[in-house]
Image 1: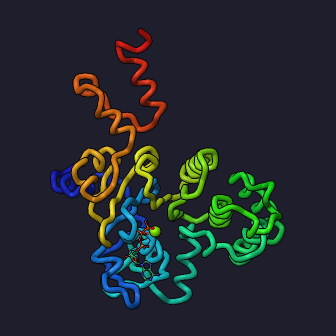
Image 2: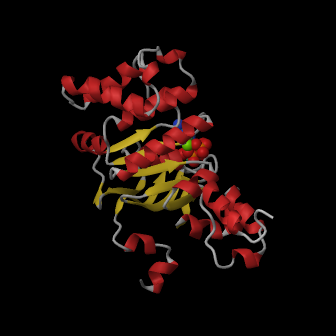
Image 3: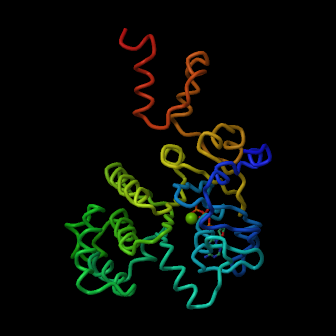
Length: 297
Ligand SMILES: Nc1ncnc2c1ncn2[C@@H]1O[C@H](COP(=O)(O)OP(=O)(O)OP(=O)(O)O)[C@@H](O)[C@H]1O
Ligand SMILES: [Mg+2]
């Protein structure tokens, strides 16, 4: 690996990983807005990886997702899907949207029919799935999201967290190549979050590239292979979780927090930490603490 690639933090991408989506100098303003929502955004989403996009409120995460799907069009700059510039012709957009699934930040924007069962079936019918397969696929995906008992419950009787899971089920049922999740754990309790993460692991292992916009640094740190940090419509940091969070001063200057596990880790004496990589999960931290000389005394 050459030093230049290392310095650019692109080493991960040059080792046989191709970008599935790229933004190049993308500028976009919402009508009537004083400031650009995307202000020269350049980033790459590595294919086959779990990427977390972090950034404070208003940094442009959701606006980027809408660009990745071709729902917004940049005023300058361009988006690429597997190396080819996005075309905004209806036929091409339809094809793109069969390959990219977006779970909106607000489930109310996504769900249109009356019940989870109807909503997920509608998406499959629209995608041209045979009627005979629809019932089976709906059952399977609602089960996976722990929603089987709510299949026929009116959507307006569901909690926000339940609606969020229905929206995700609807997108997963379509088996996209790239799954974009906008704040997927917002409104979810711990049990539902764990279930979601297990489902996402299964989805990722099946070969789907998964990208998540999140404010939850603990989640990003534990889950992601690759982290992008956005600020004021730009991507300001890119790297593995270790690379990104090593830069504590930059993270806090951006108004973000260090993951709690890293804070705890750094509170341990340096001689204890010096030959070990920081733990990524609570389980790893527990195993590590149990090995320390004072453990069990
Ligand atoms: N529909 C809209 N109309 C006008 N301005 C908008 C609209 N949606 C977003 N913006 C503006 O664009 C900028 C980027 O917003 P965006 O929703 O992409 O940020 P975000 O990183 O997803 O934030 P959050 O973490 O709150 O979800 C913000 O300044 C926001 O005020
Ligand atoms: Mg958002």
